[in-house]
Amino acid sequence: VQLQASGGGLVQAGGSLRLSCAASGNIFSIRDMGWYRQAPGKQREWVAGITSSGSKMYSDSVKGRFTISRDNAKKTVSLQMNSLKPEDTAVYYCNFISGGPWGQGTQVTVSS
Image (cartoon, rainbow, N blue to C red; front, side, top):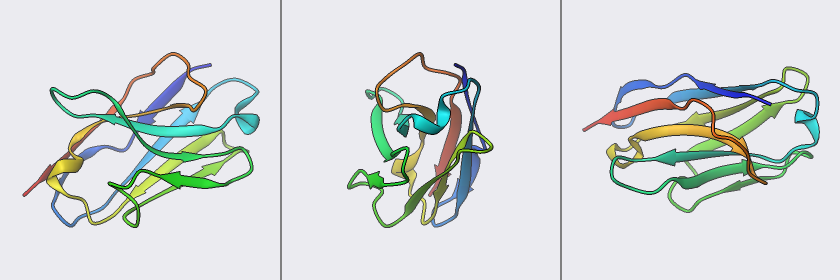
């Protein structure tokens, strides 16, 4: 299974971006999915997750600002990011909550 994140870019503080992750393979609908990010000089951290049934979870740092969603028919998981802050600057990745190879991430840069 391959995971490809897209939708990153440069945005001013307070702005919004929508990330999307496309998955290949036939078992996407039964896998819990997550978004992660890695800022320069920091370890990769979990940001948000969504179960196969649609239950959503968020890290405290993004709760109330980010929204995760999924479309099992299209095998995609998305992350709507609002009220972006400079500290949200990172490379964003999607992956299975249970783990797996890391695909290509997408850079999000928030200017102050």
